[in-house]
Length: 401
Image 1 (spheres, rainbow, N blue to C red):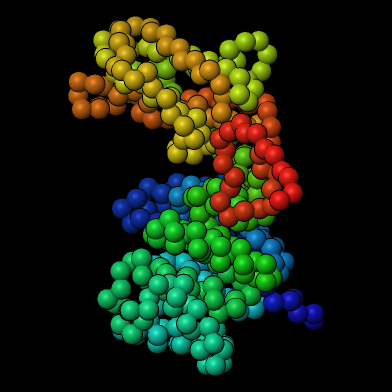
Image 2 (image 1 turned 135 degrees about the vertical axis):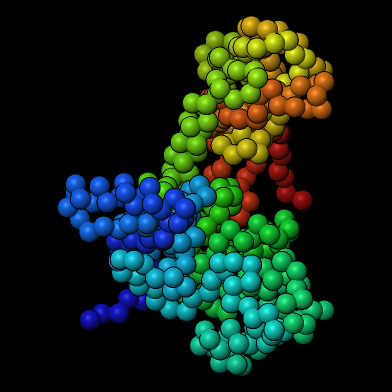
């Protein structure tokens, strides 16, 4: 039988279930028994499926980002790949040395010093002591623990534990690197260094599985994506296509709720060109809202544009409170130029009452999508931080010195 090369990951028909909350299990058990009896299958009373028939096939050097809402099964799948957890059904094959960062203190013994934790983990990964010692100073410098490396880990902060855990996972030459959302604990500088390191190990042939809600980091780091929802794979493929479909689904669900959230409802919203035709880069953009209110308010209106997340590329407001009368009110905002490259963007709106210390009249939410036609700005090679989504016109000249 031929052995797969180191760095290969194969997960076939993975199912995983957990015992349901006991307080809710009785009702769920009754429904499950009826369903099982109708379908002629064995009863699985009181169990909740966390993963359903998940498939994953990664070759050495490939990189995949797992995306999805909280509770979709991303971390469960990662734990199964590291053998921290075993599937209820299915086969898993992970070949080679595995470096994993699944939780802040995962794999770190609190009673050992940072130095001892590095040496012990290296030994468990099968590295000779001299190989660990060769990389020791580099790991300590990366984790910025020079003054604390001989202190017991139980006295480390969450950020220090994360830095130590990532340094151990990424610097001991893993064939497979598995990283969960724990990077969010670190500051922006540390996150950037971690993403740089992941790029480096990818260039050395390491296989990467990256779980994160930071979609920009996933897109910049991974070549492929897997979208999980309620334990099932919704979509797989090139990371940009998967992220695009995921963003559209999130925005679509939010748009369906636009008429019921807050004291002020939005009956219609649109982003239109100032002139005729299409919305184009560096040309005018008109944003129109039709609001319906249950009373008279004086509120601050904020309109933002994003690529799908709640963090906007830019936000505008009138600079003063806006009267919103009972019944229907039309609001129009005109931008003299559209500072966006070609692509699809989301329009976000939030309205807050001036007189009640910023009480929400309409919570910050995406209400519509619109397309911009113009230059493509991301033709450069893949970078850790995605190129700026804002368009800035510039003039260049080059000459020999």
